[in-house]
Each structure stands twice: as structure tokens, then as C-alpha cells.
Length: 219
Image 1: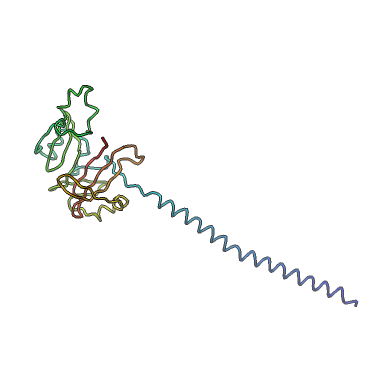
Image 2 (image 1 turned 60 degrees about the horizontal axis):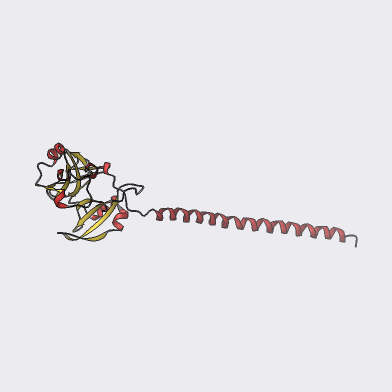
């Protein structure tokens, strides 16, 4: 019986070692699971950020050059230098648009309304007041084109080409019944990042090619 205490001490020591090994193994097994969970949460957060920004793209006016030379606003002298003489001229008073570009120049009594004119050239329409002119509607006829962020867009530009610049807008492409034209595909581009403007730019597509653009503003 004198060996009994020695045997008991030996058995207790073995038992403690086994418990320590089991605890160590359980900790090591849990670590990969926690790391995998954290990685998954990061991926979900990243993906949701990408999905939320699905607004149509912005087309800033200061990034456009008409025929590679003129911004949207220019002088009558510059108009004739780049586009030549107008094909026709009409008074806004007779066309009766619900909005117009140089409306801040209109007198309170409308006494100068007859001085506001539309200049037409190869299907495009420009608004004029005295020596100032602005693009209202631009047709990609003949050799007319725009440079946008250095990229040339003209009547040969395809819808696939436009998708590289405006992927969200092309995803939201719609069809509009346009007077004198019939049904045309159209995309809408915002005028500013913060959506301050109530208007937008309509880009019309015909037979899969860029056709014309128009600044739209609500009445």
C-alpha cells in the first residue's frame, strides 16, 4: 500500500496534461473560423458600396468642345467662324418655348422678347441674344462632333462606345417618341454631381449610332 500515493500522483499528472492539450486544440480550431467570418463581412460591405452608386453619369458643360473648338456658350462672331452662316433664324416669341437659356436677360415687361432668336444650322439649334449664343440642340450631322474629356463623339459613335463613357446611363436607356423623328433611344445625363440642376442632357441614339443631344429643362 506504500506505493498508492505515488500511483495517484502519477495519474493526476497525466490527467492534467490531457486537459491542457484539449484546451489548446480547441483554441487553435476556433481561430480560422473567426478570421473567415471577418473576411466575409468586409467583402459584403465593399460590394454593397459598389452597388449603391447607380446614378446616371454627369456630363459637365466645361468638359465639352463643339467641333473641338467651342464650349456651350460663345459669341456670334465665334459661331460664324466655326459653323458658318446660319441656315435660318426664328424669333423665340414665335416658337414659344416654355424655357430658354438667356431668360435672365428678359425684361420684366417682356419688351425685349423679340430680340431673343434661334439660329439653325444643319439641324442644330442655337439660342441667341444680342452678341451671345449658346447650344440648345446639337445634331451630329455631316462632320459635326464634340470632344468630351478628349474623346471624339460623332455620328459614327456606337451605343457600345457610349457605354464605355456612360455605363449606368446606357443600362437605363429608354425609348422616346420624338416629334418628326419617331421612336428614338435616349439616355439622360446629369448636369452636376450634386443634382442641383432640375434639368438634364438628353442623348439620342438612332439605329445604334449617336444622333443628337439636347439640353432639357422643366417648364
